[in-house]
Image 1 (cartoon, one colour):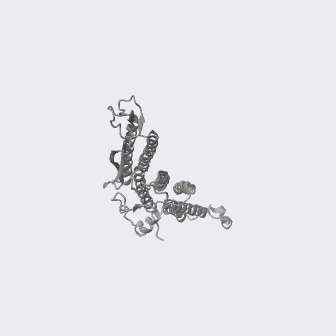
Image 2 (cartoon, chains in turn purple, orange, blue; image 1 turned 135 degrees about the vertical axis):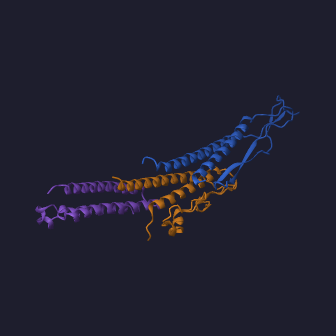
Image 3 (tube, chains in turn orange, blue, brown; image 1 turned 60 degrees about the vertical axis):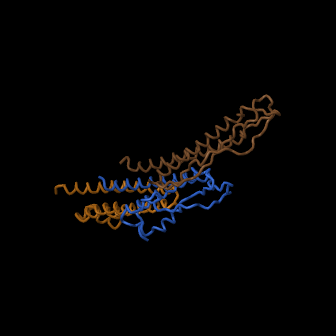
Length: 109
Length: 126
Length: 138
């Protein structure tokens, strides 16, 4: 439920930037040869988004367990805190990606 | 299994905790009343099993909070200690311990709701 | 009336009942030596208090209230005090049927119950406050 919101916004931003200028997130000319070596920037971002969604879902599951009555309090607190951290980071990255894309799109050729 | 809405579950649990608190209050107030048997609510798991179908309902206002007991069964609990000559089955220490449990669960409940609510608004903001 | 407000109401009734009980105990203690004023007269007779529970329709909780304040029917102990104004022909005086130790024990029980009811009020109040706090600091 909650993970969906963050992931959707994030993934949309990444995919939108990717489709608009395909070479943008792949590091330009110089790294074309290096694509097979490491993952592209888009993939890295995608993985980060997936991790965040998983953390959020984990926190949600732990909280539901806690509400039903049997979960270790400290574990619940830890899960929720990591979820908040992950979400904060993801949102910051999302905002940076969007503003970077806008800035690049404004550059004169 | 159907997905359970976190906020609905939290609301239901806090209602259950409130009913439990009032049962504990009745027990403590009547600790010296002859013939009074201690009451307690049915366990929360039983409540969940009972309303498993309706918990995923989309109408959040439809959780049945009209009556003071909000649809939970409050019934006399089994006396598991010595029965006093006055037939009063309230053990004050047990009641106070139950009250402590209620408080801890309630604090966790409100903290969870607060955290997830802030996460949701965090995403929408900026 | 929601359950937490009901809890407050019930605990308040508990406080009232235990206060009455303490009042009775203090009356007994104060009059533990109160003999009669004429020869052969009866002294102070110990008071007893009983509670009863009453289900409050509005809140659904069991309030407690005083059932009755009556007198202890047990016999008066007799002491030999020829100079006392209540002494009969043989010099024996009927003393109040108040046992100080029993009254003290009753008093500490009443205190314990009073404290427990007070705890309930504090907790119910805190729970209500926590719920309202969810809305604050937006």
